[in-house]
Image (cartoon, rainbow, N blue to C red; front, side):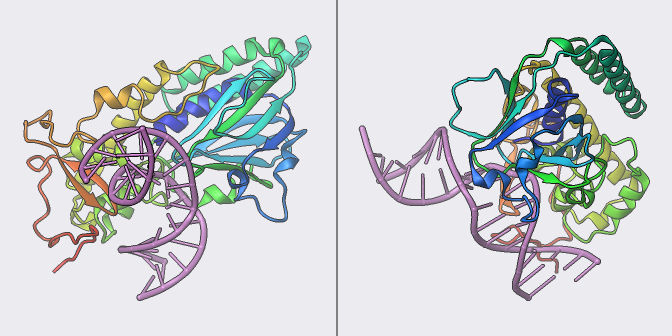
Length: 338
DNA sequence: CCTGCCGCCTGCGCGC
DNA sequence: TGCGCGCAGGCGGCAG
């Protein structure tokens, strides 16, 4: 399941393979994949457009086009991007195909591309030390630009919860993404304000972590991992947590994100952008999620699984004691304070 | 405005 | 062997 680290890994793969390239044709193989396309616009208008850069907020990706429109992509539960040569046998989960023009740039165009890549890298560097990898990716992309043959960019999606659509004028920040809170890897995130927002919520803290309008990119897996790390039970009401406690939780989310990003970065290559959230890192490094019955790595108490918010939650009953003040959870996991 | 809940999907693993 | 069922879960929309 793609959460922020997986989506960021995909963003880097897309940046490497798609930046500067022109889409010559689009092919929608499953209508559900473009269901979010407004009636007054047409996904087909992507054809003929050039991709300037790939951006991300939380779990949303968008391709900023030179026309200042954007192509928004969400992986949903099972979305993947792949780059394949023309004529590759179709995959059963292929939903959208973008055909990319061959690149045979003249020397001055290459120089311009290098400059653009440096701009992007500089911007990202100011943001995060993670951007060092980004820089390398952009440079590799620029260096091989003139060699790029015709390529197809495939959007695969088994469960069809994901999709793509054109957002007119959305290159900077599409309206469909504007409602999301900045994510914890966003250099412009106001962390103090975020702590205050969370502190005002009279809702279980796990719900708050999963609320993409508060801060984006956290899904069920990383929520459980961060809560375990910070020793907080997910049903603790957010407005009962102290500022330092919330700060520690946000630190935990950030650390888990970064560790997962490193693992993701090592297991994907440039031409095969795999977005299977269950790979590598998950099997080896998870402390709570999916560890039902196994000993807590900190204290040895068996990890417990509960149904909460109609999905599973995993926690250590010793390190993450259930809050006393919140009453009991109903069968649906709803809190009944009294 | 705020919170909570439902439906959308498909593949897998389980029990019978 | 095969069938049905529960589960996995992000997110938009809507009800209260």
